[in-house]
Image: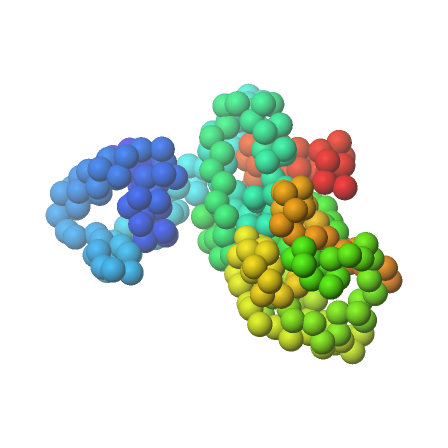
Length: 299
């Protein structure tokens, strides 16, 4: 049995999807199916059940999954030690990142990283913050990038950078003619924003409570792209990272208004499992993310 087959099996269990597992391992979906059939033939039992909600492990599959995870983690440790000894930066690197950072801030860092370390096979997925924490603790990803990183006994946080948050509105909104407004000017405004459990939303709601400002939420979304589309069609105004709306500002579909009496900075953090020995590929990725010359591109 090949170690790659066990990884494919684990990826199917974790994603619930043959197609996602295929994409993560750079193989075809039919190849995934064939590898899983080979496992079932070898162990003479059914390992996965398919349903509309995705692939789920059978009781036998759950046993194989737990054992495979242990094998893969030990294999990863061996590879890490050998790479460190030989001073080699290669192999797989799995990174999960929140949408607003992944879509609008990661590209220059990733481009530089791939230029420096072309032998690393980087897999980047956009994910919700709660899933990033879960995948980090479970060892399913090497690194995560989140906003307002939360302390957790199993999570190590590495400070990354800070995003400047700004008010955004459609071009025909009364605020669009102003370059700066006070935070109190937002009192009573129709607002769209993140869902309530998202850390950025919680931080803004706390700020509004502290300043005794009430906004009327008419839309709550789980990602930055939907929030921007809602602003563009006039559903309401919002407060978002400046880096996430540069394209819309250039094309005139969204107006940015800076706050005159507040500077709202959203901290970003790199997270990994506490106590887990990072591979050279992960260590170098963090080094690139922390480079001042690349961070200045977003200021």
